[in-house]
Image 1 (cartoon, rainbow, N blue to C red):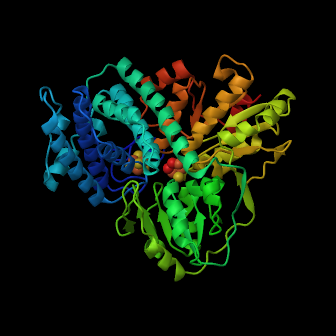
Image 2: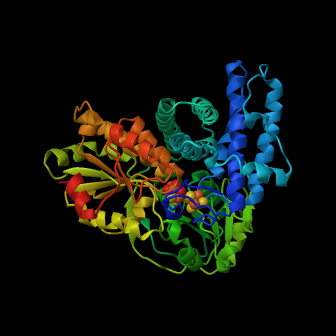
Image 3: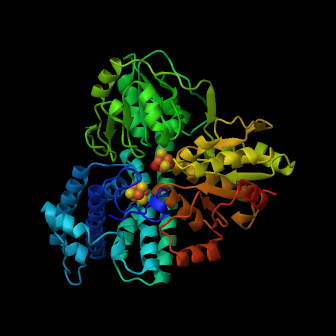
Length: 540
Ligand code: FS2
Ligand code: SF4
C-alpha cells in the first residue's frame, strides 16, 4: 500500500505497511482500485455528456459516494470497497453501451475484473505511485483529495434533496483528467478549478442546510450530562441527526452530539428538540476515552472513526459513508428514511453517560448570524477594539504538535477575534477567551464545510469597508488540516483569491517541493513556526 492523503501519514511521507489511522493494506489497495474504477466511470460519463446524452442523478451520487467513502477515517470495511468496485463496474458496463464513439478509451474504462485475486493484483499497479513524475503525482493527488472533500459536502446536500449538476459534471471531468497526460501548467489550472468547484459545493450545502434547518443562531450548548440513557451521534450528517431526534422523541433516551456534530445544536430546526441535550466530549481523536465513558451506543454518520476498542465496539453503529468491520451498519440510501430502532433499544439498556465536563460553550456564528452583527463588528474595528480576525478553521488531530493551536490562541492579544469552523475549534473553544464588547473572541461558524461561512463573512466585510482586495482586510489565516475536506477548503480559499494562508501542523506530504514552491510564489502559502514567531509575523 501507499497512502499519503492525510496529515498524520507515517513520517510525514506515506503509510506503506498499515495506516497510522488503522487502515489495513488490503483496504488501502481496494480504495485505490475503487478510485481507478471511478476514474474509468467518470471518463464514460464525461464522454456521454459530450455526445449530448444524459447521466442520471443516481450515477452522480454513486460517484460522489465512492470518493467520500475513501476519505480518511470514514470506512474501514474491505467488503464495502469490493462491493462498490463491483457496482461501479456494472454501472460503467451499462453506460458504455450507450456511448457511440468507443475509440481511444482509457485503460481505466477498459478494465473489468471481478476475481478478488486479480483485483488485488491490479490494485498494486494503479495506486498513487503509478504516476512516476513526482510533480504530476502531487498535482493529480491534490486534485483528487480536493474532489474527495467536495464529494463529502455534495453528499450531505444530496441527502437533503439538493444537487448542483455543474459540480458533478466538473468532478467527473476532473477525475477523468487525472488519467490524462496533462502538463504541469494544465494540472495547476485544474487544481484552481477544483477550488472554484469547492466554493460552489460548499455554497450548495450551505443552502441545503439553512433552507432545511434554518440559519444557525447564537446558542449556548450544554457540555454536561443528564440522567437519561443517551445516544451519541458523531460525524457531519445533519439529516441522520434529524431522523434520530424524531425517532427518540418520547422514548426517554437523550441525544448528544460529538466532535463535528456539535454545530447541529445551532440550527433552529434541530435545537428545538428537547431530546437534543448537548455535546459530549471533544474532537474525533479523543473517542477512545470518551466513547467508553459515554456508556450508551454511538452512531457514526461519517468520518472520523478511530478503530474502536473491544470494550465498546458493540456499541458502535455506522451509517452512510461510514463503516467498520464488526460494527452494525444502518442502511438507507440518499433521501431514504433510516430506522434507528435498534440503537434506541440498545440505549435503553445502558447507563446514562458519565459526566466528564460541565458548563456550556457558545457557537452559531455562521454568516447570517455574523452579518446581522456586522454594524457592531465594524464599529469595534473602527474604534480599534478589534485589531485582527484570525481564521483558525480546519481539523484537530492526535499529534502533540497540534498543541501549537491552543498556545497560539492563548497568546493572541485581547483585541483579536478567532473565526473558526471544523473540529480544529476543540483546541481552544473551552479556554474562556472572553469577549470584545459582547462579541465572543471565538466565533464558531460550524463544521469544516461551514468554512464557506467564513469566506462569506470576509466578502461581506470587504464590501462594508469598501476594499478592492479581500487580502486588505484585517484577517489572517492560520489553518490546521488533517483530512481531505480541509484540502477542498484550502483550494476554495485560494480560488477566492485569499493569500498568505498558514497551514499546519505540517505541510501535506503529497505536495512535492516544486508544487510547494508554486503555492508559495503564487499564493504566499506557508507552514507554521513557533507560537512567538507566528504571533509576531501574523498579528503585530
Ligand atoms: Fe474533523 Fe474529521 Fe470535519 Fe475532518 S471530525 S478531521 O473529518 O471533516 O473536520
Ligand atoms: Fe496513512 Fe492517513 Fe492514508 Fe490513513 S489516511 S493510511 S493515516 S495517509
